[in-house]
Image (cartoon, rainbow, N blue to C red; front, side, top):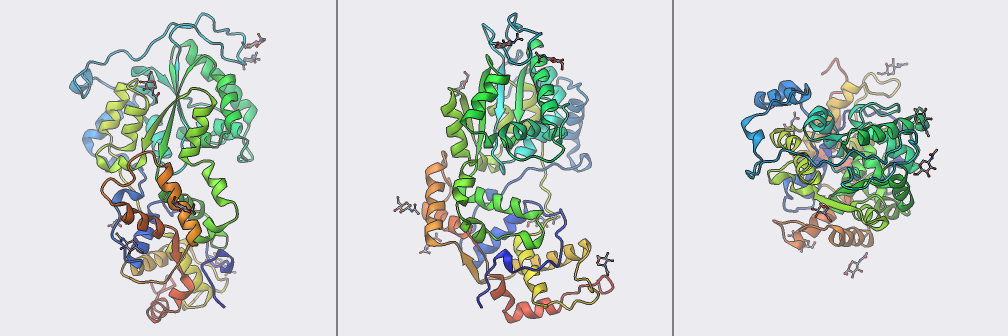
Amino acid sequence: MHRNCGASTFTVLVLIPAVLYLYGSLRSIHQLQRTLRLLTIGRGDIKENTFATNKQRDSHVLKKEQSALGGVALPTNEESTSSTGIHITTPRQWQASDSFDENNNTTAVPVSGNPPTLFWHVGPHKTSTTAIQRFLAANKYLLREKDNIESPWMMPGHFHGAEIVVNVARCLSGRKGPKDMSCQQMLQSFQHFVAGARADSKNIVLSAEGFSFFNELQIQQFVQDYFAGWEIRVIVFFRRFDDWLASLHFQKNRHTPFRERSNIVDFLEAPSIFSTVEFHYSHKVRERYQSVTDHNVTIVNFHTADEGRSLIEQFVCDGLQGMAPHTCRAAQRFVSIKINKSHSLDSGFLLAEALEQNMLPLLDFANRTLSSDEETSLLARIDRKLETSTDLPVRCLSETAQGHVWNRTKEWFPFDLERSKSLSKAENVSRSRTCCLDVSRVCALDDWKAFFRGLPVSREID
Ligand SMILES: *[C@@H]1O[C@H](CO)[C@@H](O)[C@H](O)[C@H]1NC(C)=O
Ligand SMILES: *[C@@H]1O[C@H](CO)[C@@H](O)[C@H](O)[C@H]1NC(C)=O
Ligand SMILES: *[C@@H]1O[C@H](CO)[C@@H](O)[C@H](O)[C@H]1NC(C)=O
Ligand SMILES: *[C@@H]1O[C@H](CO)[C@@H](O)[C@H](O)[C@H]1NC(C)=O
Ligand SMILES: *[C@@H]1O[C@H](CO)[C@@H](O)[C@H](O)[C@H]1NC(C)=O
Ligand SMILES: *[C@@H]1O[C@H](CO)[C@@H](O)[C@H](O)[C@H]1NC(C)=O
Ligand SMILES: *[C@@H]1O[C@H](CO)[C@@H](O)[C@H](O)[C@H]1NC(C)=O
């Protein structure tokens, strides 16, 4: 029987700890490229900014960060002048609204004159939204005190801290949230926050990838209910569709137990998958936000992060349209460090297959489970083996589906697809992303059989 990499063939043997990180998919893609004898794609194809601990940070940056965190943000020489030499002192101001009715907090009332601005970052997922939210949270005092931009940091709800706005998006998009979502209370609190910001003449920034799930009606309703009379500026990040799909797939699987995982081929061959995921892809999101009103939409190219300006910098400096000059400078100084203590999904699929086929000498696994330490060590060994393997058998998406992915990638990416690469090469790379290792055929290879037999699987041996 031909056993493909379908998740249905896995037995429950191991539980994946929640240490898999997005970075793992980079290795996975590199592996596939080698396998398919393709030229290397740029290093920026999978990019996730993450945050190092203070200890790991450059001390210069650390000092600046701490002053910002403490709300002191002492001006430095560079802070009196923008990078272009233009003196930027006053963030946008407007008259405190006299038409705002404090006794009526159900609907924001339009103000005459210069209205406050809502910067509305609507994702989508897998475009460094979390990194941006963390940066905004870490710099909330700077943002508020120096740049006059508020974001809610205290609201009841399931999500806290940097991700607090996710509550709002979840509650209003009608997507199922965690059971302890107390939407009514949270939305009331959100309404007070907006009213307070307005009374204090503050602009607002909201960042949540969940806004990418809003349909036209929900976008309209949200503006009507909370931001009537505000100037709305929407920010949408664009990641190549093929690259985004691979990242989305990884995200959906990394915390999932083995049995429920699906490889990227099965993932993309599921019925109506494209219409489901395309709805919250940048292109469609942008279309919806643009169509509903005359919202001013700024688009950011996810793939330019390697060209010297981080996505955080692009968000704060370009996305906030020059209205956050102090925070922009903090973003320019900020160094984000990648953490990659993870494993590719490939190693997970291979380990599941090898365990199912009893290819590992299971010494002390009467109940057929692995401790997370053992599992981590096994996955690392498999990853190392994968890195030195070439020509492994793969299974790819059907030609039609591949054509669909590639056509959408070309049609929907509003920037230069791959500045440094020819189109044909880009297409090959696109196709390599929609393949997965054929794990049953890999496990049938002699060197892999020997490899699995030789794996130490108990802590005594380790
Ligand atoms: C609150 O404001 C909305 C919109 O301006 C208005 O329709 C509504 O009647 C007001 N409610 C009260 C209780 O004043
Ligand atoms: C406005 O908010 C206050 C505080 O939660 C609440 O008591 C009041 O009922 C709200 N007013 C309206 C009109 O919703
Ligand atoms: C959005 O508004 C700002 C300020 O009015 C303007 O500079 C910018 O060009 C606008 N962007 C779009 C996409 O309309
Ligand atoms: C992170 O990944 C890079 C590239 O794959 C590798 O060289 C480096 O050793 C990894 N770091 C850690 C801590 O695993
Ligand atoms: C099953 O494995 C787990 C994890 O190694 C262990 O904690 C547990 O005691 C084992 N149960 C039995 C019955 O051996
Ligand atoms: C992709 O685009 C090409 C050229 O426009 C077209 O011939 C082909 O049918 C398209 N394939 C799919 C699956 O949409
Ligand atoms: C892309 O794939 C085609 C057919 O598979 C091959 O002929 C071509 O050389 C590849 N191009 C690159 C740049 O790898």
